[in-house]
Image (cartoon, rainbow, N blue to C red):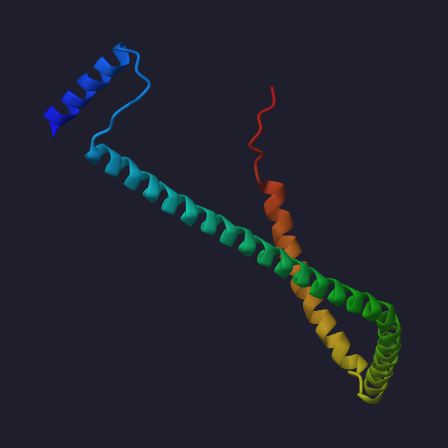
Length: 155
């Protein structure tokens, strides 16, 4: 094969030196080039089909995006309509809640008025015991704080 290729190249070089206008190919070269061209044509056709399919896919995706957009716009319009109606609904509910809260407060006050209070003697007894313990605590802490030595030095 190598010898045939070298012989063909020498013949071509010789033909060019004589300034002829024809180029000769061997049958093997001719078949190879013809098959390569056919193969290149098949590959080109496949690439063309793939690019057209890609374009169709992009178009379909664009249509899908547009339909999604239309659905979202419809939802937004519905939300705007409900937002206009909601203040009336909330206003009614807040007024009802305020009435219920006022009623609950009145019920609590009525219950507090009905429950008996502690007697004054019970309150005095608890106050005097807490005062005595506080006085004892404060006097002990007062004595300790006066006899404690300061860590600072005076010159």
